[in-house]
Every structure is written in C-alpha cells, then in structure tokens.
Image (cartoon, one colour):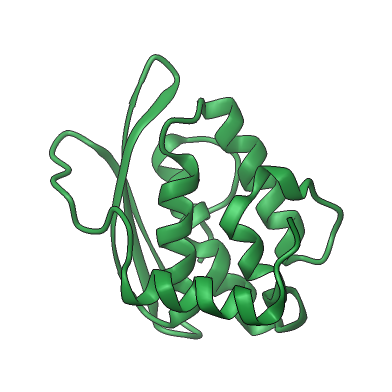
Length: 145
C-alpha cells in the first residue's frame, strides 16, 4: 500500500502523540542505547526474545519526531516476528530510507517514513532505533552512531 504524503504525516504524528510500547516493564530484556549527535536523538531499545522469536520490545526515546515515530512503528512492526523476519524488515527499511529498492509489503506503517530518503540528515533519525535493536540482538546493522 502506498501512502500519500498527507497519510504519512498523519501516521508519523499519531506515533509521536501516542507512542506504542514505550517504557513498559523491561527487566531481563536485552538492550542497547544509541545517540545521534547531529540531531540529539537518544534511543534505548529493550528486547525480549524466546526461541528466535521477538516476544516484546519497549524503548526509551528522546529526540525529533522522525526518531520517535520510527521507534514506535518499529516496535509494532517487529513484535511477534522471528529474528530472520526482523533482519529482512530492517534490510528493507534501510533500503527504503536510502532510496534503494525494497519490498513495500514487509514494512507496513514504516512506509510512512519513505520521505526521509530525500532528506539525508533525517536518515539517521529514522534508522537509529533499528540500529539499536540490531545491536541489542547482535544481528545485522551497525552501531557506529
């Protein structure tokens, strides 16, 4: 499903105003914190997994609306997925925001962040939570922020 600019804005604003899965109980979860010094974003992602499946994700995030929305959308998108599915989603998301070929069906509401591809300074804002998740899970992605 392609999202119009207006629908994308509405989705982003909804996730900023009503972040999903934020600051839930997270004892015994894997975690990783990343910072984006150019924008001031700070994301800590907490992940619980069992048998190669993501059981729960929660997070703490401060920063711009793109980073906040991206973190909220990511949490909804990855909960319940296998680690392999998560890696595929992350690859598709990264390809999308870099302006490369990607599978739209894998991304659900994350498609609303497609526009960051034309604003290079916002790519880090959108990808920061995915990089933190990847680092927490020791999977694809880098953590050189």
